[in-house]
Each structure stands twice: as C-alpha cells, then as structure tokens.
Image: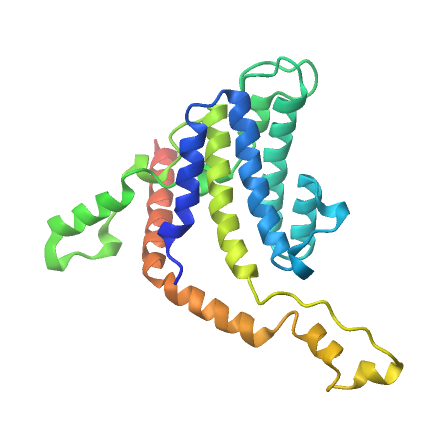
Length: 256
C-alpha cells in the first residue's frame, strides 16, 4: 500500500543532502535527483528496463517521457527549467552562485523566477501537527471545512530567493515523479516474438501477438489506479484543505 510518507522519504533525503552544499552543488545534485526519477519512470516501460542510446541524455529522457505519455507537459517544462539552471551553473566558469550575473544570456536568478512547482506544491513543515492539534482542541464537533490553515504552512515563503525556489521545485518534482513512477509500474515488458508470416498477424493464439497486446493491459491499469486511489483516500481531504487554504490567503492578499 502506497502512503504519502513513502513519497516524501526521498524528498527528505534530498533536502538533507542539499543543506550544506554550495549553490553550484545544489544545482548539480538537485538536477541529478530529478534526472534519476525521470530515468526510473522511463525505464519502467522499456524492454528489460533498458534505454536506447539516443535516450540517455537528461533532455532526451525528459522528452521521451512526455512523448510516451508518462509525464505531463507542465512537468516536462518544469524539468527543462531545472535542466537549464543546472547547465548554466555547471558550464559557465565563475557561475558559482544563484545570484551571480551571467557573462552572457539570462541569469540563473531570472530562470529560477520561472520555476512554478516550488509554489504549487509547497507543504509547510509542521502542517500535519497543526491539523492534529486543531482537531484535538475542537473536539468531536470539529468539521474539516471550518479549518483555514495558516499562510506560512500553505504558501511558499521564500519569494524570489533563487536557491530556495530551485530546491523547492526539485523537491516537488521528485514527489510528483514518484507518483508517475508508480503509475508506470507494470510487469516486466517482454520482447515481442517475431511474426513468421502474414497470417500470424491476425492469429489471436500467436504468442508474439499476445506479448504485444499485453504491453498495455487496460484491466491491469484500471485495477492499479483503483488500488492507488484507495491507498491515498485518507490523504485526499488534506490535499483539498491545503488548496482551499491557499486560495483563501490569495484572496486576502488581493483585497489588501
């Protein structure tokens, strides 16, 4: 059974890894963490879990994952932004800080302002504890729709800080790709048998055809999605609560 805690275990490891890194180290390690997740999503649908030689570069893997329907266009674009920041920090001499002006082209700081997942998937530290305490105070009459979470728990607090935005988006992407990885999981993809003659193309008993057809078994996908939704059912209310609280605070800011 899949739980939210399992999704965030890797995120916590990455956050701990990045804490004491230089800005350049953050860019390289953060992008590597995202690339590793893209790699695993893609390999899960490949024969023998092997990538073709043309699909081993980070950008190529990201494009393959999108074209195969394994990640969304929004996820693809955010990953590409992370890759652009990584490349800028890795390949320009002297570019050792998120705030350093570039020798040419766009600055890393500017690129970081275009990252969106740091805000969209922000989950403040202590959020679960806050909810538990609120329910304890309210008692048996507590109704979840009456709770408005504090702004600092649901809205990204670091503004235009380039490093924090990059780290936030990396953590969010790793979480999202963790779900994509589970959705893509299936039995090992077999290598289809060759057809010996035209008649075998239409022979339902042909093992090669059976192998080909079961690459995308609809009933298995349906069963998996159903079990996935069941295991995450207890988290749906919390996700909706975060979204509602975020909208509330955004409206409050607009009024001010």
